[in-house]
Image (cartoon, each protein chain N blue to C red):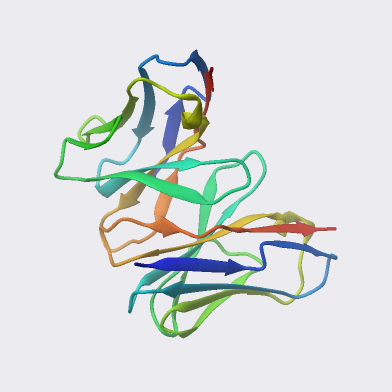
Length: 112
Length: 113
């Protein structure tokens, strides 16, 4: 069966510091991968998606970037965090277009 | 731009009642629609996926319907239980090569024992 992992589970970072969040999927190959953010009082927002290694599509211009160095690894990064980057970051995968999406446990990021 | 609206924002009912959660979307050109539940501080659990060509899907006490032409979906929960308490999210996946889901803000459901 497939499993999706995210780490860390919780992170508190000062403004201006770098960020690296990691997501890995087990039990499947060539998944579509996604990063979403859930901010307080707002709905889930798609940030990035990837259909293959090195292929990244950005949905919202912002202070963040994503990379996919391996087939089942998706990384969310920032060089300098802003207060507005605080939120709950969720990684998801799907077998392909028009398929069900499955979400990881999330990372709670607080920027102070 | 696709917008997804969920009504009501919050709902509290006694245990055992049947209930309906509503979801509407503005662009009917969707690949599919997915219902999730989210427990506090947790990730999303997929409940049901309805493809654009389907009218409904059922899983246990849950039934989801889709009326693509009118831009509406409902999630029916039969014989509600306290364990059903959670936030329920509706999300649509656009067609035309775009990927990712557009979410509503959810319905916060409380089932009173």
